[in-house]
Image (cartoon, rainbow, N blue to C red; front, top):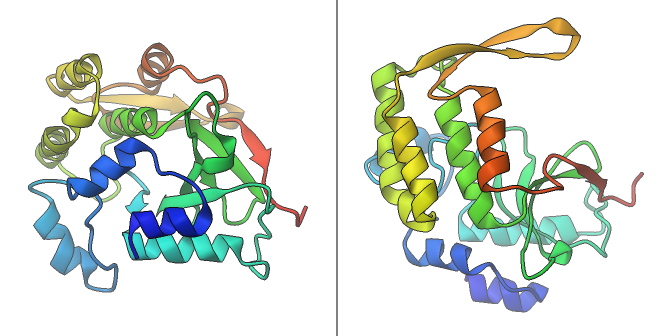
Length: 234
């Protein structure tokens, strides 16, 4: 299956950036399986593929994309996606939620990126287009060192440096310059305030409040983080 075949089958056009990423090999993550992290992941780390180190983001290869699109359109699928809405998955979370192009939600030539939840009958707006989504995910990555998996400061900075090396070409000069400036910072510890007054310790190159401010400055989107119903199941 090719991107063109998926487009022809489902009657939509992929964003030009996604096409460019595919052409550049940025979507070539191989076949996931029990040994993927041991055998495939190490071959990708020197020149990271699309958002390789992003938190809770598993890029789908083209064959998996084709299967996922067909599954969402299946009338017998448990999610019962509204047939008037067209979602084209390109990645997933560990829980099985899908990062999708919201093809039927195009506005002014922009195809939004949404998170299609597997158990909520809803979708969540993440960015007005793939370009903004990519920049936002890179910012997120700089704000969130993976201390759960004991990623060291050196590993964290090395992952970011190599990621920026393969991703900067898809950003504006101003965005790439900002990320380079953030990369030169000292790593800091900060707290995130949660509901009911709880607080959670985090570590990274920028705080959650800085992240929100930079997102608003660089990629403003009035629908960001809003939700909408996408299922006929209720």
